[in-house]
Image (cartoon, rainbow, N blue to C red; front, side, top):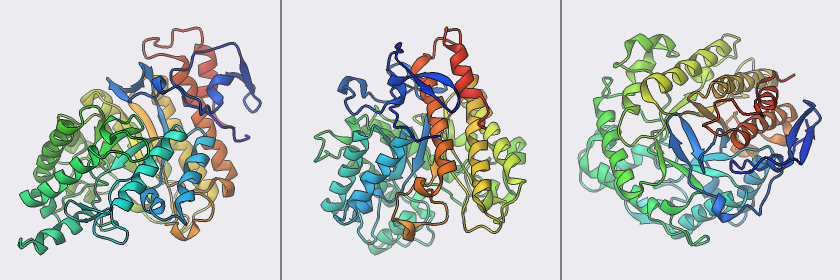
Length: 445
């Protein structure tokens, strides 16, 4: 399928001008499939949550998106800034609408936060550029505020800062419990939310380009396997983020492991260790202020590094369990915020990667068809040409993966049709039901 630039504009009205998608031989409105840089400001509104759906202007907003974590760091250097534009340009060409990226780099090379509350203005302006550039391509951002892991500083850097200030901290998990470190984190939340973008002249907390804030990338607190420490941290920080920025959505950033509050769900975890890392999918997401659930999908990290056919049914059952729980117990959307497979895995081939991606996409569509909580997926990870040296094995470069590119594009088309043609109140009763079913839910050949 030829790559077609698409605007996923949930407030676009259906008109009689139709574009024939020659691959599926289905008539699709031209207005949906054409990327329009002239979108009116009035149409670029905050994403909101209604029940178990995301909405923009009262229309559903299902997400086909991606991760590119290094955008801010690349934007900080004139020689690599163009790569940021390339990422957004390529992503928009296959209809992707949301990008998850880091709004942190703590105490490292080209750090945003050099020490607590001390920021490098050049790097903050780079983040301004990322936000500004995303809007040009009508891509919204999930901004993650700190890392659980040591890359880009993470909670370990906060502990180092605490010890440099005279505290006697012995565990990286002190990040969650020590009041001084909680204060450092809150200061970063405040600095990020109140940041005045030097390019758009809009404060971050007022900018619809930001889809959501993420408390932390993949939080774990292994020192407290019962999960109380992390639960209290989530409660405190969710309340704090919302006190500063009540307009944007908020998510935690969890991998999605089931914890002690739901032992009956342990069967869906990828391994027995998953229930001991201090996280608890249902309990954590019941915290006031958390708007949607997050889960990641990494069978090659969690089950076995070698690619295996058995990973595919795990992916399906893992997703279905979380979608089911988001509907029945949480009453909120769930976004699968990272998924992928590494080309470095023993037995890897591109056909397997496409099978995994197709499984993820179809499982989301099965939820979409029923108006369920499966709200979207974000590939890990999306790279432009010429950035191979940054590849951790998971990178997808469209020019090198035509079959994957077609699959992404088709998923975007299906979700764009649903978002644009059928309001959340229609319950599949509208006259467009047939065309939606044909395009959204027919198996990809």
